[in-house]
Length: 231
Image (tube, rainbow, N blue to C red):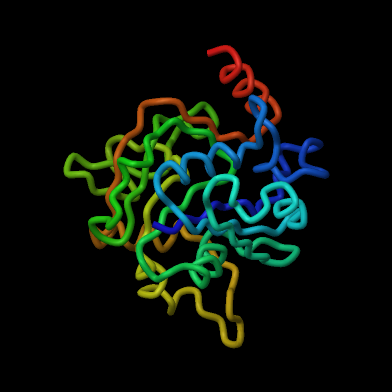
């Protein structure tokens, strides 16, 4: 599989740490947060990894190079001064891929989920990894049903881990919702497209009960650093 790492966010809640360093490049336990992802994607057998960029975009290539140190081929997409949101960023990254199902992962999370468990061809349009709700997202995002389907709502909602496998058709089949005349890569969110696909029974998922951190604040970054250095 090809892979996409979302790295275009401004990291405003992480300031002042992100005034000069993009959040995915912040160090945790001796290496950049994004490097943990690159190691795992390499072990999975990925070869092409697209990194979408916006805020402090020029920092990524000097820090990560062409990916050869991980046995990867890194490609960078620049979205301009304002990120294209998750949907627009994914659409732009897809232009660098082979048209097959791909893995996407948020650059500002840390998770010990075994990526080898992901389906290379999802049952439907997407397969998402869910986790128990953290304190900062107590109501969760989506409901995981008994048959493995995900729904917008249900008896028990879990939090999306920021890890998933997607078919390009998820975006192509919804193009009427995001196309803008004369705009090749418009700005739009992915969540509404996922909810529509869920209503059609086209999104499945699984619950991961291991370690997961949304590294959204300096405090969470410091706590993750402590946990990894002193397990």
